Length: 97
Image 1 (cartoon, rainbow, N blue to C red):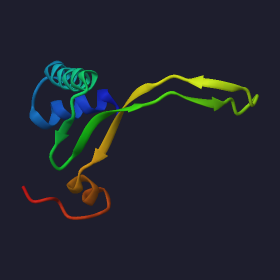
Image 2 (tube, rainbow, N blue to C red):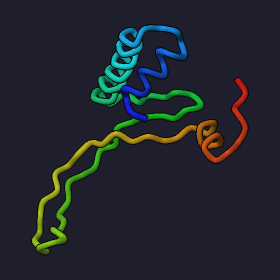
Image 3 (tube, one colour):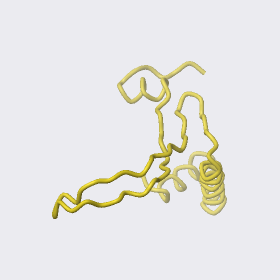
């Protein structure tokens, strides 16, 4: 699903204009991005959680040339699926609300 498909689906499901749905989706993503930039953990019960993991730098090899390279330390977003979503994806029943 693309962002534009998400916006269209939200507009149809909730009976709102595409423009209002776009504002909602953009705002949601912006808030999530800002939280992860600050290093905050985001938990959406039943869906999953997002957090930023830090990785140390290390020495690696270029697979094509075999030359040693220095890999810089980095921070990457990480998603852990929630139990309800995992059950649904694997063909389980809808979770109780």
